[in-house]
Length: 105
Length: 118
Image 1 (spheres, rainbow over the protein chains, first blue to last red):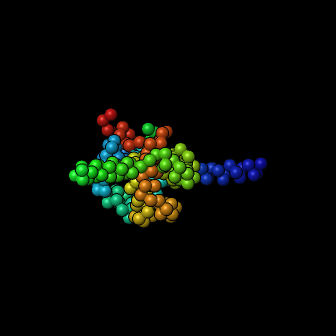
Image 2: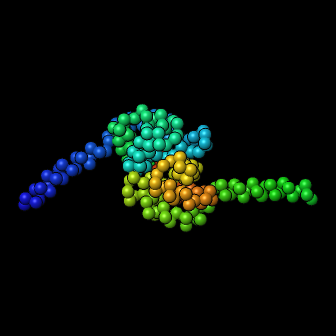
Image 3: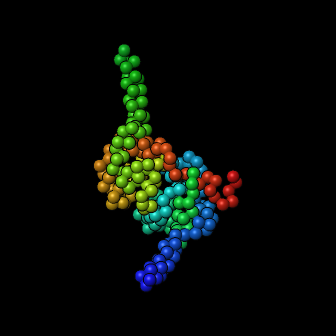
């Protein structure tokens, strides 16, 4: 009984912590407005070097956080994305990644 | 005759160059065996969300990403190791394989932006 109670207490502490790690999809939906300029146009190409900007709707949450963080830190070189990354707080990234990863084709 | 052969040779070189630039999906499928451990057998990376989904991603973006890993412009210890072993042809083959893989879950943001005209 005590063990079950301890488990319940442990879970009630752990679960909100996991949930808080993710962002708010509704807030993210508003924050991705800027992204649409390039990522919202089917077939849109990066001018130089010339390649399609990636599809990011439906992408995995942790990968999106890693990519945005790398841009923010300057570890990925794309100039436009570095500027975007610099303007985002960690909460913005969580909200954006939560919304983007929830999109289905 | 010599005047005729030169354009033909040039045309053949051009066509073969174009073919290799687009890659070979079947060859890519074979070469993708090590990738599946993280990116999933279906390219949807359902195993661990730290790895990106690749199925249906734009071909030329995958090419760009792999070259960046190979050159060290993108720094990821796992991908650096794999990309170092890839030739340009391997990269083209892998990119065409993943970009044409059916059942992808990726999409652009068209229709997914608040306030956007549908």
